[in-house]
Every structure is written in C-alpha cells, then in structure tokens.
Image (cartoon, rainbow over all chains, first blue to last red):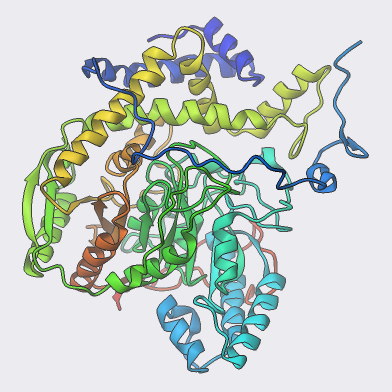
Length: 95
Length: 522
C-alpha cells in the first residue's frame, strides 16, 4: 500500500499532529514501507475466524452503580498547563 | 561490610531479617551507587532519595518491632511509565512535561504496601515504544555490558532499558518494567538479567501510562529467577480499577523455584528457527534443550504455523491502540501545551512538539489503519490473525507444558547502530511479540554469552496463568547456566559518589577504558 503526500497530510490532520513539508515527504516513505510490510497478512486465510477479544474466556466485571470518587477538583486541575479556579483554560472556541 | 548492592533481593531480605544491616544502610548503599554510576548509564531519570530514606526508616522501625512485611526495606527502581503520587512521571515523553500524579499505580501501591523502598524512576523508550531505549526524551541508556576489548556504548534493550541496566549494574535490587511486544524480556536477555511478562490480566494496568491496552502488561526485571518470583507475587493482584485484571488468587511463585522439572514436557517450536538466525543463537537454544533434558524434562517438536504473522499483526494492533490511547495528550488537562491560534492549532502544535519521531510514526500508522474504510482490512484482520496465533499455542499446550525459544535474534547492538529503517528495529521483538499477541506469560533467563562477550537469553512460554511453571523451568536453566554479571564496573565515578543528587544527563558520559576482564560468573 503506497500512501501519497496528500494521504499523509490527511492522516496527520486526523491525528492532530502538525507536520512540516520535509516530515510529510519522509513519512510518505516510512508509512508506505510499514504498510507494505504488514500486507503479508493478506496471505492468511481468516475466513470464519473470530477476532480475538479475550485471552481467557471471561466477562468484564461490573461494579455497583454507586459513586466511589469525587470532590477532588484540586487534584484534577493540579497538572493543567492553564487553569482558572477549577476550570481548564483553552483558547477561545466559540465566538 | 560487603557491598550491599551486589546482593540478590532474596539475600537482602534475609540480611534484613537477621539484622545484619539496616534498611537505611541498604538504601544508602544504593543511593551512593546511583550517585556514582548513573551519570555514565543514564538508567534513572529521577532519583528519589528523600522518599527512599523515609521509607527505609519506616522499614527499620517495623523490622525492630518484628512486624516486617514481605518486601520490607528492599530498594527498587520504578519504570517511569508507572504513576507515582507526588513524584514526576513522564513516560519519558516531552508531552508529559513535569506531570506529577496525584495518585499511585496499583502495582507500585502493592509494592509499597509490601514494604518496598523506591529509589527513583527509570528511563525507558518514549511511551514504551522502542527496542533500544533510544527514543527517550532523557537520552539513551547505556548497557553496563560491553563487547570484549571494546568501549562502544551498547543499548540495554527496550523499552524497559533503564530497568534492565539498573538491575545489571546493581543500581537497585530489582525493577518494575512493562511489556507490550517484548519490552521486559528483550532488555533482560541482552543485559544478563531475568524478566517475566505475566499473563495478560495478572497485574493491574491501572495507573500505568497506556500504550496498547490489549497487549500492555506489567512485570519485573530482577537478578535471579527467585527474585523475579518474589517481585511478581507482590506486583500482581486483582484490581477493581482494571476490569481486565483477573479475579484469581496470586500464587506463591517462590514456592515453585527449585522444584523438580522431572517429566516436564518442553516444546520446541520449529517456526522460531528463522532464516539467517545467527549460529550462536541456534547453539544457545540447543544448549538450553540439553540442560532441560539433563534435568529430567522431555523435549518435543511442536509447530506454531502462524508465528511469522505475529510481528506484522502486532504493527497494526499496537499502533491502532496507541493512536487511540495517546489521543488524550491534547495540551489541555496536563502536560505540555504549545499555544496555537485556535484550539485545533493548539492540539496540533502541542502534539508535534511533544511526541518524538517514533511515537508520531506509530500514531499516524494507527490513525491510518483505523480511518474510515480501512478498519476491516487492517485492525479486524490483525485481530483475526491473533486468534489464529492463540489457537496455535492452545494446540501446542495440549501436548506440552512449556515452550523453549531464544529471547532475541542477537546480542546487544551499539547505540545508533540500528537506525534508518524502523522495521529493522521492530525485528528485535520477533521471538517475544507472539506471547503478547496471545496474552501468554513469558520469561527470559540468562543462558550464555555471545561471541562478543555480551549476554544472551532463553525464553520460556507458558499456559495462561501458569507462571509457576516458568519459574520452575527458569530456575533449572539458571542452575545450569549460572549467573552473569558485567566484568568491570566501568560506569563508577568517584566524583559523583554522593547520595541525594538528582541524576542528570550530562555527567560522566564518556566511558572509561575497561580492563578487558572476562565476565565473572557468580
């Protein structure tokens, strides 16, 4: 699978990573190489095979639907790069 | 007093119990060793002497009262992927900046509850993505081992390269590590240490920075099989905070160490005999077979036909899950923020500045394979291949109790030696990644030296939750092979020999000349 520069830019946009022109060029080659390499999986017949979801048969445990946490707003904003009181501060989103 | 840092975890435990030395003396010995040796090795990215000495003091009080817990006063290193309350945790990525968790990971909490002492946070590949510890924001870790008559700096493996180097260089008694595709076993193999990745679900993933959630698993790197067994028992637990953690009691793994392997059925998978495999790896494997046979095991040829598809399938599953997990790093709630004109531009600038090249590459691959129209062709296909890999193992385990393979396709390589083509680096995990894909437990045990004089390991793969058999068979290999320690401690500088200093990157980087001594077997 060959990816072109436009595809690299589209993926980077989806991944929210800014890339330079030089990086886009290099990534075109690297991503194509990796995707070519994983294409060998096409040789495996997976007709009728279920995708793996569990290592051993077990159902996800559920816990009681009760509040177990809370009142830790100070902790939650403690590492924020920008905050006002108990709010995360971000660039203006709505005019 | 003998050098306390040379003790195994089990020996240190016995020494503390018999009051031969105090927990404080033990912690100080390691802090001094870190001060003198970390400049050259770069294994620790943060030393925590205040924490260590406070914990050691508390341990001494408990020991005096006769209330010692199972790991009382034993100093450990913690991979910087584990969140530690009040202690900077970065996953060795710029994007986490000075992130200081307000909570403790379940695994480390288990260790502190058992009385262990934290020496500091250990270097690793950025977000545990790498096989050489060269993608860390703090720079590479240097392997304490060197090639015979050479000063070339070698990698300690990855991603848990700080853990493997610190254990090999006696900068901690044992270390925590994590393994997504081989990140415990590969570094253990090429530093002459023991590393076990337990069955998926055995250790809680809560509070460990996530890479690929269906593959990530915590485990220890230690000096001996027994030490690894002691560590795993106190790392593992059932945890309500991780719904994939299993509701099964944790066995006393140490009880399996030293038990006979008479009649144990050992499988040798023919598909691991890959094209171009170095002769010394084949010879090591044959040696392992001979040792196990001589100690009472029977050897059986088995086939795992889908082995060669494990690595390419991994490089769909792992990047897909990583692109999803790493979406949280948006510069809003924690870590780095690189301001842009608007919110989207802020995200894009933050993630461009905060992620290194390998992480960016994997996020992009993952985004691609999960993007509209490609999910079935890539991720779903890879998950189906995983089912086939798992089925191969199930069929093999109907005939045998454990599988024996090499851990790595070769010994430690030089820093910067494998670069350019990412796939060349990925091939390091060719023997380890199958185990993660199937969720099985795997242990690497030191088994010999390469022609270059550097360590090599053998891997044992077990049935789900049968870690006990891995410890039993692993001890048989250790008994036959002996233990391996680096020749001269070239990394020790006298100038840095003071505790309480935060390790930096700059100090003592130039390796001193070795005296070319042959490695000592202890």
